[in-house]
Length: 172
Image 1 (spheres, rainbow, N blue to C red):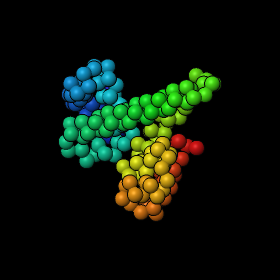
Image 2 (image 1 turned 180 degrees about the vertical axis):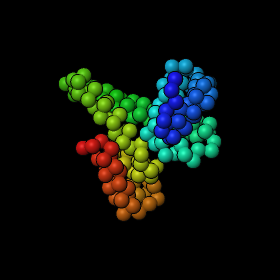
Image 3 (image 1 turned 180 degrees about the horizontal axis):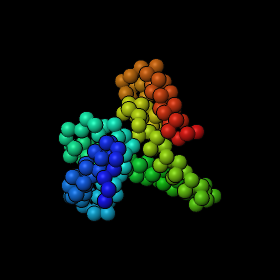
Image 4 (image 1 turned 60 degrees about the horizontal axis):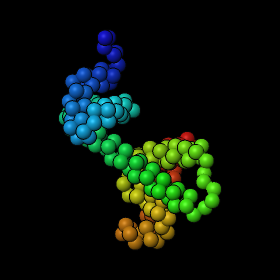
């Protein structure tokens, strides 16, 4: 196999060759499933492809890879939790109403929620939490400020930041 010409691609190629086996084994032990480990290993290196500038300063590749993989595991857990909440609410609404949403509508909503999860991925922890409390838990800005021990002005600032970020991430 030819080596990539670009220095960043060479660095990524070397990182992959040197550490993919270790990362896969680590994820397999952690997750207990070779299929999920393979998927997350792939996703970890795909994440590196999206931000190759970070490869230049990489001193501890295994620590970096394991941290990236852990974050992907957390993101997946969040996405599944959000999907479960939605499906639970959908079940409650279906019981309360006669007509249920069509399968197409459910699928479109789940795709939108997944896109939203990916869009929220790039936000800071507080901004993401403010967004979720406002739009999923439907708390007022005052309630969010009290819960997070921040000012209402900061709540508004985080909401604006998260909405702008989601707008840019979703290319709306």
